[in-house]
Amino acid sequence: LRLYRRGFKDAVIEANLQPGYTYPADAPNRRLDYLLYSPDLAATGVVIPPGAASDHLGIAADIRRN
Image 1 (cartoon, one colour):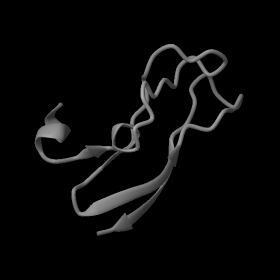
Image 2 (cartoon, rainbow, N blue to C red):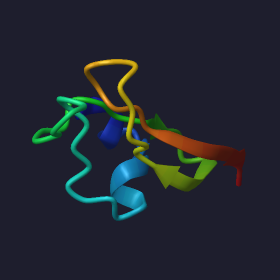
Image 3 (tube, rainbow, N blue to C red):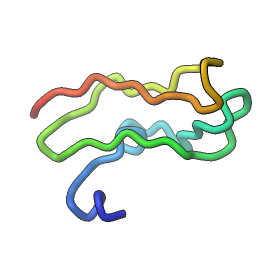
């Protein structure tokens, strides 16, 4: 919450990937993972790819300066 108040953006919310569940990986039903970035950056191509390498799903994005 502090980071949001400082202007940080949530890549999943900004990309409208709601609900953005990442846990457990085999049947996600809650969100435990976040990709936050500062206001001077932009995130594009945000995805939550399927995978079995962990019990969580990852969040991937291309990050660039505005």
